[in-house]
Image (tube, rainbow, N blue to C red; front, side, top):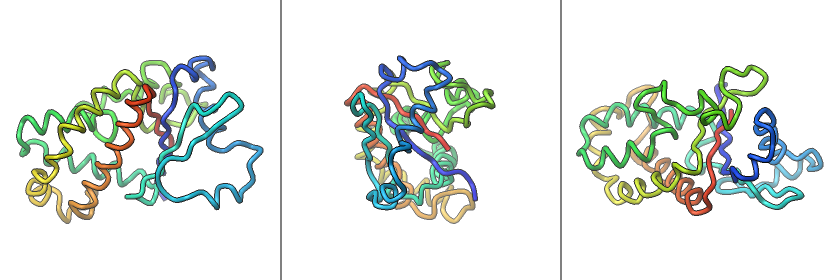
Length: 206
């Protein structure tokens, strides 16, 4: 069946008041509060932000991607596509895309993935078997740089069409089309811009 991605935008200041080992649980409880019945989840609109208030007010939101079925593989495929095509992209656009996608769906060096360390210790690390593995962690301090990189890259996405066609089109483990690839990038642009605006970070859970 594969992994699904639950992507949260969260206020790090609020989470910091919770012990590290309970921070992922706090996100999950916010997304699935025990007092809410199943009809709430069935009736939720498909795609976009769902705000998750608790007794202390809204401190996180979940983003549901319009361009995917919720499966993480779409994001992994897009990351693979970028890894394939980036050597053939103009240097200035490559720099912007690297900055934008790094830590979201691609890493220049997988060993540098903050999800492995729980965002430098802010969340439980991937080695902690008591907690679900993290798919991504982007702390608030990196979000303005990502939003700026997206602003630089967005108007130049069409430049990626030829590299995508040459290196990714019709390959297994890659997006089905260039349009699918760029639609997903635009949603990540929406997510990073909103998180940067609020000064919040991102957490991706399976």
